[in-house]
Length: 210
Image (cartoon, rainbow, N blue to C red; front, side):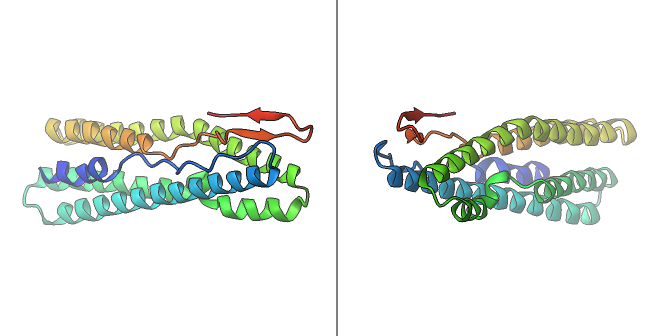
């Protein structure tokens, strides 16, 4: 029950984190469009930070709890199962630190764009492209995150099953571990690029979305 309760933190505490909707811009007001893009990028960065640090905390708590149980439980099988779980949770921490979610640096990218382009239309195009870049980057990463998450949990379950002959622990590790991975992916921020109408240099309005 302790194993399940530790990982239940991830499912209960993590809810879908979406960036707040940006104010709807007037397609005849380039300054308004830029303000809407700035707001969208700020909201996306805030949502990305909430997601990143929430899951960093969840994995850290799980690793610390299971690591402690690995040294304190009386049953040898239970200690081994908790030790394996602590290793898997630690791998989640490493993954978040080594490959953080892209929009964590959105404000820095916006500052670079503002400094590089004195023309409003060029700044609008660059910020729109930044949103699209973030969306495409995370769409490509999501399958890698899923693959690695499933692989780590499957490997841990295989060790518990074949090396330790612990079917219950192996089943819990695989089932709960995969559920946590899928919950983590489900709670990723909304990477929609929808900012209603964004005027181009020619004056035509362009509508883009996820």
